[in-house]
Length: 404
Ligand code: GTR
Image (cartoon, rainbow, N blue to C red; front, side, top):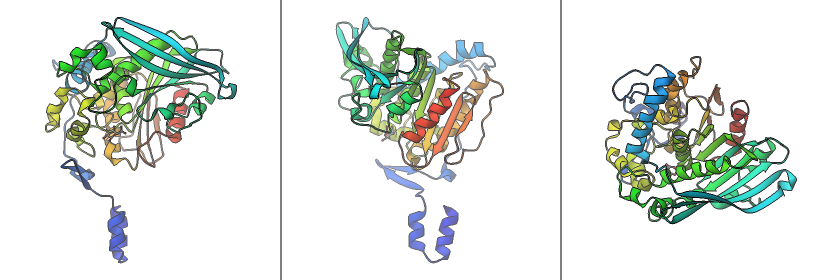
């Protein structure tokens, strides 16, 4: 961009040069948003492989028994909130079934997953297509749908790149989705009406209680509970997929529930894959101002003091180890800090290397549309906007073919 601007200025096209140069800052909610790599502050990430007592983690045993649970707890306490583990009962009701959906290629089941606790209940509605061509239980891609419900239309009258169900089925996978609003409506006035006020009202009084993202992640685990009962799917081969706020949720759900065999985090940005300490694009302060109801109350105390956070997002990616994890970014989505996401993956590497000492990643951010796949780690930076589209899905499916 700098070179382009010099050339244009030299040829007298100053006006167009101004338009062509990517803006280095912006204003949002009374704050300056940084888009300039040169003004990213220097920062020190919290040590991934050092226990709270300062002991170096050098083997899988200490990682799994000590450090991993510590990191989960740090995220629970300071970012996403604690997720209650208990409920009284769960029932699965198939509300609609079409054995020859998609022109005979798939079997559709719509399942109401109803969970009770202390006399109240919530229902998570699952849409599931399994491929008819396979006789084996199918591996599944489960999408956390944070956009319109029509994106996961069971009738297939409406088709969307956000959930290209036919393409996933034709690749031999089952494809499933639930909508976040079944667990917690995605707005600051109603988010508590669902899992939070019906099943776990006490968490609403707690500074470290989960909020919307915690409730969405909880719902993903209830879908996993259902998968373990359905013989058409292979519950040991479930990839959890989420975009943006759904991508933050997918990482948090995959961190807590290791039954998810793979996690895909599309353009998840702040408090998803991106490093908070870079303060590039959306910051902790801005996300707390705009979407405070996604995270616990304790997280607010880091809005103006990110360096005091005992975690950064590389530690969340590390919690996926040794399972496959795929992170994506888009060129026009500077708000989500693509470089900060890639650096998160790079800084998560030491945890993956406890399992596979050969694993390395290029230290430089990959070029546009040149995915980097190294063993269980996948990353791509594609052209275009903040989205989950067919480019992303086809890359992720190909990546999964030898790993999920
Ligand atoms: C944005 C938000 C991001 C991201 C995105 C989305 O407005 O600032 O953190 O989650 O929404 O979910 O699409």
